[in-house]
Amino acid sequence: MRFAGRSVFHSPRPPCPSSFRPGWPRAIHPSPLMMLLATKNLVAHYGDFQALFGIDFEVDAGELIAIIGSNGAGKSTFLKTLTGLISAARDQVMFEGTAIGGWAPGKIVELGIAMVPEGRRLFSSLNVEENLLLGAYTKRPGPWNLEKVFELFPVLREKRRVPSTSLSGGQQQMVAIGRALMANPKLLICDEISLGLAPIVAKDLYDALPKITAGCLTALIVEQEIGLAQKVSNRLYCFQEGKVSLAGKSNEVTREQISLAYFGI
Image 1 (spheres, rainbow, N blue to C red):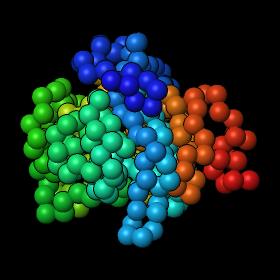
Image 2: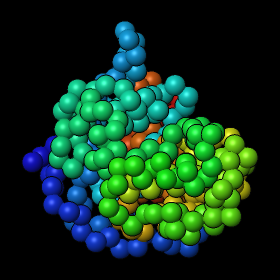
Image 3: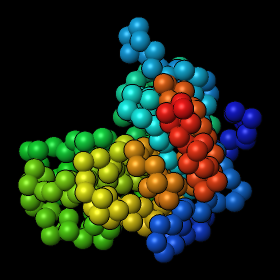
């Protein structure tokens, strides 16, 4: 099958080389590339208000893609259409060759897409371990379990019986990431995981990304900090007023191009 001019493969992804590099590494995607997710002319509405205008977007298996843009540019709306929280036409969203636009969120999670939502949204009545276990409700097979999450974020092992409300902001974000990983997704979507965190805490979270994607997991992040988004990603998209204003390789786009795409000046 072909979508957006490129082949969509239905076979399992080939083994990925490790994406881990010292410092601020970029994930290495497999060869040959296989399209995991794509949108074609995607539109979205809040009632009569149109929020997205013809978004064409592609993610290959094993990539780490960043989305940047000012507040109100349509970034979170776009993520909500991918995860079924906002309805879209069936054939406007493709995942591994399957048209999933308008699918129920639970069905999309079962298919292999998990999101770390903006603001973390932990269950205050549950402790750390209970919040993490909620992510495994689909029982998808894969490498992620409690032990592996605790290896990724050792502090959570120490606080596994602690109420989630007693954690710091950075620790709560670790739980939110770990909960999404417990679903053993093929695509991990992160919406502003650095929001409200001290820069050093945000850097620690992003330092964990290479370990997360080393197992051939594909990641899509929304990030307000442009420099950070460029450092951790293979490619980036900039949204402005519900449209894609820039798309390119993260290490090739210039600050001038980003400024024009971001602010329209």
